[in-house]
Image (tube, rainbow, N blue to C red):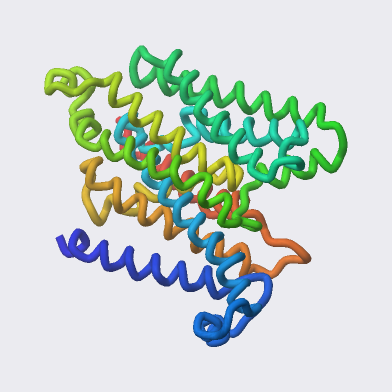
Length: 329
Protein backbone atom coordinates (compact mmCIF):
# COMPACT_ATOMS: atom_id res chain seq x y z
CA UNK A 1 0.00 0.00 0.00
CA UNK A 2 2.84 2.37 0.85
CA UNK A 3 4.44 1.64 -2.52
CA UNK A 4 1.20 2.48 -4.32
CA UNK A 5 1.10 5.86 -2.63
CA UNK A 6 4.77 6.67 -3.07
CA UNK A 7 5.43 5.60 -6.65
CA UNK A 8 4.22 8.91 -8.21
CA UNK A 9 6.63 10.84 -5.98
CA UNK A 10 9.47 8.43 -6.78
CA UNK A 11 8.73 8.62 -10.51
CA UNK A 12 8.56 12.41 -10.45
CA UNK A 13 11.86 12.77 -8.58
CA UNK A 14 13.67 10.30 -10.84
CA UNK A 15 12.30 11.85 -14.03
CA UNK A 16 13.25 15.36 -12.90
CA UNK A 17 16.74 14.14 -11.96
CA UNK A 18 17.14 12.43 -15.34
CA UNK A 19 15.99 15.51 -17.24
CA UNK A 20 18.37 17.80 -15.32
CA UNK A 21 21.28 15.42 -15.89
CA UNK A 22 20.42 15.17 -19.58
CA UNK A 23 20.37 18.95 -19.90
CA UNK A 24 23.60 19.32 -17.94
CA UNK A 25 25.78 16.57 -19.44
CA UNK A 26 27.07 16.55 -22.98
CA UNK A 27 30.10 16.18 -25.18
CA UNK A 28 31.01 19.78 -24.37
CA UNK A 29 31.34 20.24 -20.59
CA UNK A 30 29.72 23.38 -19.26
CA UNK A 31 29.40 24.35 -15.63
CA UNK A 32 25.74 23.85 -14.60
CA UNK A 33 25.77 27.36 -13.13
CA UNK A 34 26.79 28.73 -16.52
CA UNK A 35 23.96 26.82 -18.18
CA UNK A 36 21.45 28.13 -15.65
CA UNK A 37 22.77 31.67 -16.00
CA UNK A 38 22.47 31.51 -19.80
CA UNK A 39 18.67 31.61 -19.40
CA UNK A 40 18.93 35.15 -18.04
CA UNK A 41 21.73 36.42 -20.29
CA UNK A 42 21.19 38.23 -23.63
CA UNK A 43 20.28 35.83 -26.42
CA UNK A 44 21.84 34.18 -28.28
CA UNK A 45 24.82 33.04 -26.25
CA UNK A 46 26.86 29.86 -26.62
CA UNK A 47 25.62 28.13 -23.47
CA UNK A 48 22.00 28.96 -24.35
CA UNK A 49 22.39 27.58 -27.88
CA UNK A 50 23.91 24.34 -26.58
CA UNK A 51 21.13 23.98 -24.01
CA UNK A 52 18.17 24.79 -26.27
CA UNK A 53 19.30 23.58 -29.69
CA UNK A 54 21.24 20.44 -28.72
CA UNK A 55 20.37 19.11 -25.28
CA UNK A 56 16.72 20.16 -24.87
CA UNK A 57 15.38 18.42 -28.04
CA UNK A 58 17.43 15.33 -27.18
CA UNK A 59 15.93 15.25 -23.70
CA UNK A 60 12.35 15.82 -24.89
CA UNK A 61 12.71 13.14 -27.55
CA UNK A 62 14.17 10.75 -24.97
CA UNK A 63 11.15 11.25 -22.70
CA UNK A 64 8.69 10.74 -25.59
CA UNK A 65 10.45 7.64 -26.90
CA UNK A 66 10.93 6.03 -23.49
CA UNK A 67 7.33 6.66 -22.49
CA UNK A 68 6.11 5.18 -25.79
CA UNK A 69 8.17 2.03 -25.32
CA UNK A 70 7.09 1.58 -21.69
CA UNK A 71 3.40 2.22 -22.37
CA UNK A 72 3.19 -0.02 -25.43
CA UNK A 73 5.09 -2.78 -23.62
CA UNK A 74 2.57 -2.69 -20.75
CA UNK A 75 -0.39 -2.80 -23.15
CA UNK A 76 1.04 -5.67 -25.19
CA UNK A 77 1.86 -7.72 -22.09
CA UNK A 78 -1.75 -7.29 -20.98
CA UNK A 79 -3.24 -7.92 -24.43
CA UNK A 80 -1.16 -11.02 -25.17
CA UNK A 81 -1.06 -12.16 -21.52
CA UNK A 82 2.64 -12.73 -22.00
CA UNK A 83 5.21 -11.24 -19.59
CA UNK A 84 7.87 -11.37 -22.32
CA UNK A 85 5.88 -9.28 -24.80
CA UNK A 86 7.37 -5.99 -25.96
CA UNK A 87 6.87 -3.61 -28.91
CA UNK A 88 9.24 -5.42 -31.25
CA UNK A 89 7.19 -8.62 -30.95
CA UNK A 90 4.57 -7.54 -33.50
CA UNK A 91 6.94 -6.39 -36.22
CA UNK A 92 6.39 -2.66 -35.69
CA UNK A 93 9.98 -1.81 -34.76
CA UNK A 94 11.34 -3.89 -37.63
CA UNK A 95 8.94 -2.19 -40.05
CA UNK A 96 10.06 1.25 -38.90
CA UNK A 97 13.68 0.18 -39.24
CA UNK A 98 13.12 -1.07 -42.80
CA UNK A 99 11.39 2.14 -43.83
CA UNK A 100 14.20 4.28 -42.45
CA UNK A 101 16.88 2.06 -43.99
CA UNK A 102 15.22 2.35 -47.41
CA UNK A 103 15.33 6.13 -47.09
CA UNK A 104 19.07 5.92 -46.44
CA UNK A 105 19.62 3.27 -49.15
CA UNK A 106 17.97 5.28 -51.92
CA UNK A 107 19.63 8.52 -50.84
CA UNK A 108 16.38 10.22 -49.80
CA UNK A 109 17.83 11.12 -46.40
CA UNK A 110 20.62 13.08 -48.10
CA UNK A 111 18.23 15.19 -50.17
CA UNK A 112 15.42 15.62 -47.63
CA UNK A 113 16.30 15.84 -43.93
CA UNK A 114 13.04 14.33 -42.64
CA UNK A 115 12.87 11.51 -45.19
CA UNK A 116 14.27 8.93 -42.74
CA UNK A 117 11.69 9.46 -39.97
CA UNK A 118 8.80 9.80 -42.44
CA UNK A 119 9.72 6.55 -44.21
CA UNK A 120 10.19 4.91 -40.81
CA UNK A 121 6.68 5.88 -39.72
CA UNK A 122 5.28 4.58 -43.02
CA UNK A 123 7.17 1.29 -42.55
CA UNK A 124 5.83 0.86 -39.01
CA UNK A 125 2.24 1.41 -40.11
CA UNK A 126 2.65 -1.00 -43.04
CA UNK A 127 4.11 -3.68 -40.75
CA UNK A 128 1.28 -3.21 -38.24
CA UNK A 129 -1.37 -3.52 -40.96
CA UNK A 130 0.30 -6.70 -42.26
CA UNK A 131 0.46 -8.21 -38.76
CA UNK A 132 -3.18 -7.34 -38.11
CA UNK A 133 -4.40 -8.70 -41.45
CA UNK A 134 -2.78 -12.14 -41.03
CA UNK A 135 -3.07 -12.42 -37.24
CA UNK A 136 -6.82 -12.21 -36.72
CA UNK A 137 -7.30 -15.71 -35.39
CA UNK A 138 -6.39 -15.01 -31.77
CA UNK A 139 -3.54 -14.12 -29.47
CA UNK A 140 -1.22 -16.93 -30.55
CA UNK A 141 -1.92 -16.20 -34.21
CA UNK A 142 -1.09 -12.54 -33.73
CA UNK A 143 2.20 -13.38 -31.98
CA UNK A 144 3.17 -15.75 -34.80
CA UNK A 145 2.15 -13.16 -37.38
CA UNK A 146 4.30 -10.56 -35.61
CA UNK A 147 7.29 -12.90 -35.59
CA UNK A 148 6.81 -13.59 -39.30
CA UNK A 149 6.49 -9.90 -40.16
CA UNK A 150 9.56 -9.09 -38.05
CA UNK A 151 11.52 -11.73 -39.96
CA UNK A 152 10.33 -10.34 -43.29
CA UNK A 153 11.28 -6.78 -42.37
CA UNK A 154 14.66 -7.91 -41.02
CA UNK A 155 15.29 -9.70 -44.31
CA UNK A 156 14.56 -6.44 -46.12
CA UNK A 157 17.11 -4.61 -43.95
CA UNK A 158 19.67 -7.34 -44.65
CA UNK A 159 19.06 -7.02 -48.39
CA UNK A 160 19.58 -3.27 -48.20
CA UNK A 161 22.89 -3.83 -46.41
CA UNK A 162 23.87 -6.54 -48.89
CA UNK A 163 23.25 -4.35 -51.95
CA UNK A 164 24.28 -1.01 -50.44
CA UNK A 165 25.86 1.12 -53.19
CA UNK A 166 28.95 2.02 -51.17
CA UNK A 167 30.64 1.60 -47.80
CA UNK A 168 29.41 5.00 -46.65
CA UNK A 169 25.80 3.83 -47.03
CA UNK A 170 26.58 0.59 -45.16
CA UNK A 171 28.15 2.59 -42.33
CA UNK A 172 25.22 5.03 -42.15
CA UNK A 173 22.64 2.23 -42.09
CA UNK A 174 24.57 0.23 -39.47
CA UNK A 175 25.09 3.21 -37.19
CA UNK A 176 21.41 4.16 -37.45
CA UNK A 177 20.29 0.62 -36.59
CA UNK A 178 22.31 0.73 -33.36
CA UNK A 179 19.96 3.41 -32.01
CA UNK A 180 20.84 6.85 -30.72
CA UNK A 181 19.41 10.20 -29.62
CA UNK A 182 22.52 12.01 -30.78
CA UNK A 183 21.90 14.84 -33.28
CA UNK A 184 18.23 15.12 -32.25
CA UNK A 185 16.61 18.42 -33.18
CA UNK A 186 13.29 20.21 -32.82
CA UNK A 187 12.23 19.27 -36.38
CA UNK A 188 12.33 15.60 -35.42
CA UNK A 189 10.43 16.28 -32.19
CA UNK A 190 7.71 18.21 -34.02
CA UNK A 191 7.45 15.53 -36.71
CA UNK A 192 6.99 12.54 -34.42
CA UNK A 193 5.15 14.14 -31.48
CA UNK A 194 1.67 14.10 -33.14
CA UNK A 195 2.05 10.42 -34.09
CA UNK A 196 3.29 9.53 -30.60
CA UNK A 197 0.45 11.40 -28.87
CA UNK A 198 -2.15 9.78 -31.14
CA UNK A 199 -0.61 6.40 -30.38
CA UNK A 200 -0.84 7.07 -26.65
CA UNK A 201 -4.55 7.85 -27.02
CA UNK A 202 -5.16 4.55 -28.83
CA UNK A 203 -3.25 2.61 -26.18
CA UNK A 204 -5.11 4.37 -23.35
CA UNK A 205 -8.49 3.41 -24.85
CA UNK A 206 -7.51 -0.27 -24.65
CA UNK A 207 -6.97 -0.16 -20.85
CA UNK A 208 -10.42 -1.40 -19.74
CA UNK A 209 -10.43 -4.23 -22.26
CA UNK A 210 -7.02 -5.62 -21.31
CA UNK A 211 -8.22 -5.78 -17.68
CA UNK A 212 -11.03 -8.06 -18.82
CA UNK A 213 -8.59 -10.16 -20.88
CA UNK A 214 -6.88 -11.33 -17.68
CA UNK A 215 -9.90 -13.66 -17.33
CA UNK A 216 -9.33 -15.13 -20.80
CA UNK A 217 -10.60 -14.26 -24.26
CA UNK A 218 -13.91 -16.14 -23.99
CA UNK A 219 -14.73 -14.57 -20.62
CA UNK A 220 -13.73 -11.10 -21.88
CA UNK A 221 -16.05 -11.45 -24.88
CA UNK A 222 -18.89 -12.51 -22.56
CA UNK A 223 -18.34 -9.24 -20.68
CA UNK A 224 -18.80 -7.25 -23.88
CA UNK A 225 -15.18 -6.78 -24.93
CA UNK A 226 -14.72 -6.45 -28.68
CA UNK A 227 -11.45 -8.34 -29.16
CA UNK A 228 -10.96 -7.19 -32.75
CA UNK A 229 -11.33 -3.56 -31.68
CA UNK A 230 -8.96 -4.04 -28.74
CA UNK A 231 -6.29 -5.63 -30.92
CA UNK A 232 -6.69 -2.87 -33.48
CA UNK A 233 -6.29 -0.16 -30.84
CA UNK A 234 -3.24 -1.83 -29.29
CA UNK A 235 -1.56 -2.45 -32.63
CA UNK A 236 -2.41 0.98 -34.01
CA UNK A 237 -1.18 2.67 -30.84
CA UNK A 238 2.06 0.68 -30.91
CA UNK A 239 2.58 1.36 -34.62
CA UNK A 240 2.04 5.10 -34.24
CA UNK A 241 4.00 5.69 -31.04
CA UNK A 242 6.80 3.12 -31.21
CA UNK A 243 6.99 3.33 -35.00
CA UNK A 244 7.47 7.08 -34.88
CA UNK A 245 10.00 6.71 -32.05
CA UNK A 246 12.02 4.05 -33.88
CA UNK A 247 11.91 6.13 -37.04
CA UNK A 248 14.03 8.86 -35.46
CA UNK A 249 16.14 6.97 -32.93
CA UNK A 250 16.78 3.59 -34.54
CA UNK A 251 16.21 0.27 -32.80
CA UNK A 252 16.14 0.50 -28.99
CA UNK A 253 15.35 -2.74 -27.22
CA UNK A 254 14.35 -3.91 -23.74
CA UNK A 255 12.83 -0.64 -22.44
CA UNK A 256 9.33 -1.87 -23.32
CA UNK A 257 10.05 -5.17 -21.58
CA UNK A 258 11.72 -3.75 -18.47
CA UNK A 259 9.46 -0.83 -17.53
CA UNK A 260 6.22 -2.79 -16.85
CA UNK A 261 8.05 -5.36 -14.72
CA UNK A 262 9.77 -2.65 -12.67
CA UNK A 263 6.49 -0.96 -11.70
CA UNK A 264 4.26 -3.98 -11.00
CA UNK A 265 5.54 -4.52 -7.45
CA UNK A 266 4.50 -0.92 -6.68
CA UNK A 267 1.09 -0.75 -8.38
CA UNK A 268 -0.14 -4.35 -8.54
CA UNK A 269 -0.79 -6.64 -11.48
CA UNK A 270 -4.00 -5.10 -12.84
CA UNK A 271 -2.97 -4.20 -16.42
CA UNK A 272 -4.69 -0.80 -16.55
CA UNK A 273 -2.89 0.31 -13.36
CA UNK A 274 0.47 -0.51 -14.92
CA UNK A 275 0.09 1.72 -18.01
CA UNK A 276 0.91 5.19 -16.65
CA UNK A 277 3.70 4.02 -14.29
CA UNK A 278 5.25 1.95 -17.12
CA UNK A 279 5.22 5.00 -19.39
CA UNK A 280 6.90 7.15 -16.73
CA UNK A 281 9.54 4.57 -15.88
CA UNK A 282 10.14 3.88 -19.58
CA UNK A 283 10.97 7.57 -19.96
CA UNK A 284 13.14 7.48 -16.82
CA UNK A 285 15.08 4.42 -17.99
CA UNK A 286 15.74 5.80 -21.46
CA UNK A 287 16.81 9.23 -20.25
CA UNK A 288 19.23 7.78 -17.69
CA UNK A 289 20.68 5.32 -20.22
CA UNK A 290 21.10 8.17 -22.70
CA UNK A 291 22.92 10.20 -20.03
CA UNK A 292 25.19 7.16 -19.52
CA UNK A 293 26.05 7.08 -23.24
CA UNK A 294 27.44 10.60 -22.86
CA UNK A 295 29.11 10.03 -19.49
CA UNK A 296 30.96 6.81 -20.35
CA UNK A 297 34.40 7.74 -21.71
CA UNK A 298 34.99 6.51 -25.25
CA UNK A 299 37.49 7.19 -27.99
CA UNK A 300 35.90 9.83 -30.19
CA UNK A 301 32.19 8.95 -30.26
CA UNK A 302 29.38 7.99 -27.90
CA UNK A 303 28.42 4.41 -27.21
CA UNK A 304 25.15 3.85 -29.05
CA UNK A 305 21.94 3.93 -27.05
CA UNK A 306 20.59 0.64 -28.44
CA UNK A 307 23.84 -1.11 -27.53
CA UNK A 308 23.71 0.09 -23.94
CA UNK A 309 20.01 -0.79 -23.46
CA UNK A 310 20.81 -4.30 -24.68
CA UNK A 311 23.73 -4.61 -22.27
CA UNK A 312 21.50 -3.47 -19.39
CA UNK A 313 18.38 -5.36 -20.46
CA UNK A 314 19.76 -8.77 -21.42
CA UNK A 315 20.63 -9.90 -17.85
CA UNK A 316 17.12 -8.91 -16.73
CA UNK A 317 15.64 -10.91 -19.61
CA UNK A 318 17.62 -13.98 -18.59
CA UNK A 319 16.49 -13.54 -14.97
CA UNK A 320 12.88 -13.24 -16.09
CA UNK A 321 13.08 -16.42 -18.18
CA UNK A 322 14.59 -18.34 -15.24
CA UNK A 323 11.88 -16.99 -12.92
CA UNK A 324 9.10 -18.04 -15.30
CA UNK A 325 10.66 -21.48 -15.72
CA UNK A 326 10.64 -21.98 -11.94
CA UNK A 327 6.99 -20.93 -11.72
CA UNK A 328 5.86 -23.18 -14.56
CA UNK A 329 4.49 -26.60 -13.60
